[in-house]
Image (cartoon, rainbow, N blue to C red):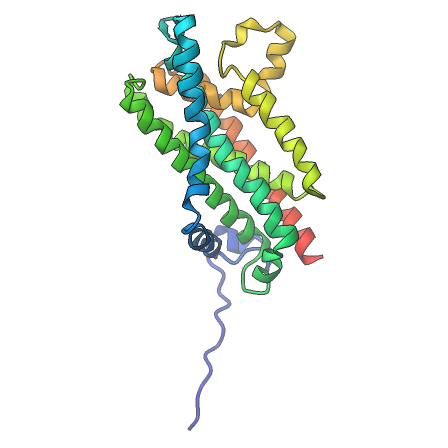
Length: 278
């Protein structure tokens, strides 16, 4: 009996498939997302644990410390409760943490010790598929944390504006940008000791990016430095959407994250290609 082997499909469709070199991108990044879902289905407690940290801050500082402070001046100059002022900032921090931790610690283990991506690149997938797949999983975690935190805020009556419906897509964009940048930085890590730099960046950013008090408490020079932090822009977006004081400056904050996401994806994919295909 004679069998006829079908010719391989060499047609490249889609913008990325047409533009990028052959082997860099195969359009199958969803396979990495499926793998992450299968691996983490038995470790769901570790996945959702990142949701609780900002929730603890909300109850501890928003309600506990807020009783001592009372009302504060909100984004539009109107007086709001301290917990309503802090909650959007913690929502932004929740999206950031969910994306960064998955795109740094987990990625480094897969890259350096599990040698997962060496195995992945023996399949039709390329370095950009790895980058997009892992960043997508990181933003899924960020979106889960954002959804959970928004649900808590809704239950506590802290969402008083219709603009709050856009807080979740904004959280996804923020998580995507932080995940892409975190992944790009991880490709430069040499050992676990280098991850002290991640904490060195995240902790001051969390404390000083107007999370708990307005930027006007700082001198002008410090205000400029704070405005360079990505979390500052994330907090401005979330605080505007949750309180309803939306203006044109929101476009600038969102553009910051669009650029950050593009830079992160490009650097991460190129670095992965250099590390894995060299």
